Image (spheres, rainbow, N blue to C red):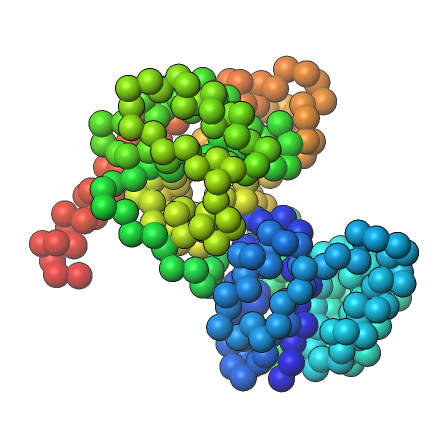
Length: 334
């Protein structure tokens, strides 16, 4: 059974597609996966044990994208099943042009034209469940969605370690403020070694936080990790404090205790999936969720109104619940 999977472009969305992929693999245990995606999504998911081939989609880089897509489809070849988690014309065309007999994607004008199954997911629901609904069309039995899953071993730290992720690639509206992250880091610095995370475009934010924490042991990894290293380093953390972002979902895949700060996005749709050790800090606003990359009203109150003390208290509640559980398990032999 050969299954072609077109992954979402964003890191977080790709990680949220993993329960659907794992569920399909449970139905088809001999499946051989071909993964197609952005550089970021492929770097995170290519370690799946059933991934036989993986490709970075470069059809829009040079020349005519339609011609490139047709050429790429011929290179991929025919599979038994194919699914796209992107709602995009070129992805529908790509699946169709591979001549795969059973193809599925989110319902749209192009998926209805070019795919055998154009699925409208149940809404409102979590994005993980929406991806499951699309994948369900490829399975004769109900798909069961478990935890997010990454097949990259977590890093082993020698001391309790807190990770801070001040960035969010989607846009500035999703980002809390460096001075607030610095206050939180200072408040927790006696309990943890601290690592700052961030992509190449978030180095400035991480440097800003680091400059506010003189005298505190900080490791600034912003712009210095591969995707594999990012996942591994996050996977081994004892606590993670982050905006709604791709790394937030990476942490959920490893069940890392997480404080997630939400502003303009739908927390019911993109919160950490099945991580019981997760706390969301957010304020109800008339204008939220706006889903905009930048605050359209110019005040950014959904994030500005969240105080450092709120996030510190949320972190301490997670620390307290974890220490209580470890005390309980050590005395009861679990």
